[in-house]
Amino acid sequence: MPELLMIALYITGGLVLLYFGADWLVQGAVTLALHLGLSPLIVGLTVVALGTSVPEALVSVQAAIGHQGGIALGNVIGSNILNIALILGLSAFFNPLKVDSHLVKADVPLLAGATFMLVVLLEDFHISRMEGAFLLLCIVGYVAGNIMTVKRTSPEEDKIEGMEIPEDSGKTLWRDVGFLILGIVTLGFGANFLVTGAVDLARIFGLSEALIGLTIVSIGTGTPELATALMAAFRKTPDLAIGNVVGSNLFNIMFVLGIAGLVAPLDGKGISSVDLYVMLGVTILLLPTVWTGRILDRKEGFLFLAIYVGYLYHLWPA
Image 1 (cartoon, rainbow, N blue to C red):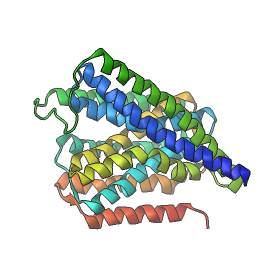
Image 2: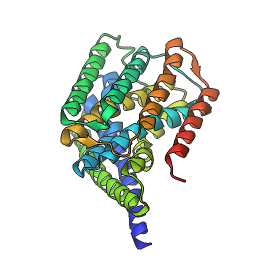
Image 3: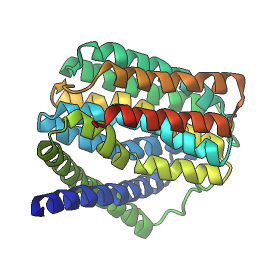
């Protein structure tokens, strides 16, 4: 029992540190980027998307260093399923979503393509260093393409509600740097605690590391996306709700797995074809809504939620 209590403390402490670390990192990075003259839309598409993927990145890198490839891959696959099936499902269930942004409409087919590419790469359930480097090159191309697209938009389209350019002063600049450093350090400790607790939990109950990564770890690292998407849905800004999920999933595939695979080859022991096809399936289900401009209504939100519950039921041992 004392060992279980310690594991619970490690996992809970890790999740809390990841939540606050991600919040501080995004807060510091966004205001610092605005201070340095980057446009609000570029900041929203790059800095915020990257910031909300940092928990997944650090957890997967920590797992890769410890040769726990099942946690690293399970974290990304589980997060991508959770982001669409649970987070968008909940958002649509409470407040139906309609996509208007041309950037978001372009990114959903791109996400479907990236997800299919990942399924092909994981045919052998392994990510090599070369494949990791390839994925990182893909995310560089994606960010560069977004920046070029934004530069062709009008100043009015370049605005994001609630993201104002701050007044430049030395005091606020140092505060932003402080938040940035504090967020990175906190995330580092949080990732270490969460992976340590997850590995010990798998060992005690005889569960695979992949199962822990697909469920507990992915749910924990998906907290920033859940908070952002639900808040966006309640504030009736559906583009932000869907854009946050789509951007996060793209960064998970190309940035998180790219950097983790570059650190150490990832062996996806415990990952199954079902996990990959569920991830691909829920992504493809988004395409009709985005292409036709239809509303993602409560019925479809409930369908996504039912898929996620069914997936968890399939995963968890009796």
